[in-house]
Length: 455
Image (cartoon, rainbow, N blue to C red; front, side, top):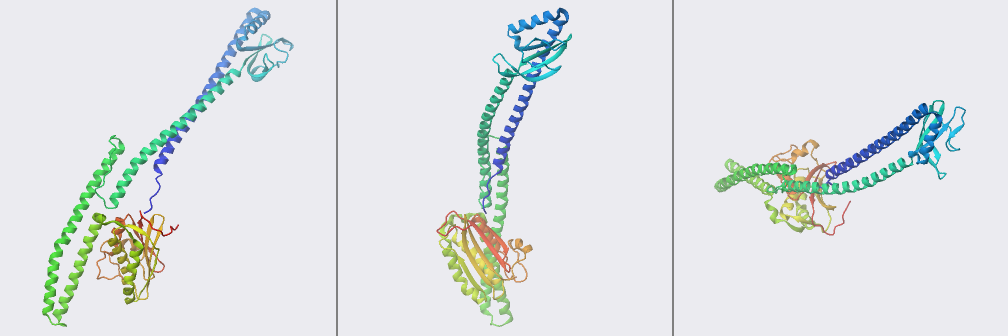
């Protein structure tokens, strides 16, 4: 089974970092807009206050007092204001010659400063007892403040992005480490190591609580499966001895009967039945042993190509006796770490199924090859095949399909192959060969020989 790239932790991290950055940008934009609006309102309020003061002075003290106040304000630096005053005839009473005559209301214009450079100003023009007065203030300081604020915000945003990315990577690493630990434990349990448990971090957080729950579940599963295997093993062991004794007595009785008699045929049939029962118990015990994972101590690197070639050669004559043709395509020098006896048993079961369950004239092809990190064993026939609806059932214990499937068998051949494949972190798949059946066994390989990697 090919491992899939872990993406959930990275997606969570990207969502976290992206959400933090987007939130910071939105808050910064809102703050910038709000600050700019507040500065504009403050400037407008100052202009309106100055306009109100001058209007009051004109009303109660006359035009001369108004001009004198404007001149004194200009001499003191103007308090940040510039003034334009015109009489009803449009003559300029105060202001620079190049200053425009503005209509009543608010204006954003450019005026020349003392150095002759144009600067942006905010101006308010109003009628003051027949005169037209304009009060303006330089917007350059406010614009400079806004630019500085934007630069500081950009720098802060870059720092925030760097911190967010760093924290996100640390978060992803911690989360992925915890999830990988859970995943490795689950994979170990699937492979038959039911004693495996998730190691706790000791922080007592939600992931530790989840790991504790999983560990309790794993312990319960281990106990249930252990009890079931023990019962199956005990039953098989307990029945094997009396059935063996029964078979021995039947064989002794058979020797006392004349060949061809009714009693002889009956006892001979009973001996055959006892042999099938013993074969059934042996297969059950073998499957239980494989599923328990106790045979892992026999794992070692071996030449799988050579083993497969030997098995195919040994079954060539068997296939000919059945009227079938056994072919092979085996890549050389494929080294696999596993149990040679079990993998030979799996290949033997698949070849026997293809030969025994198909009519004469069937071609059976055995192929072994390596693809990336997988070793693939394929046994293909062009016989009757198995319908798509029955392929899953064929991998269950004691299932014997009709038609070409022999009813004298116990239906444990393919389940044993499946148990052996899972023990080697692999899987078996039954597919349509069009015509016939293709049994595909994929095995994870930690050692590979000189065979070229195919893609």
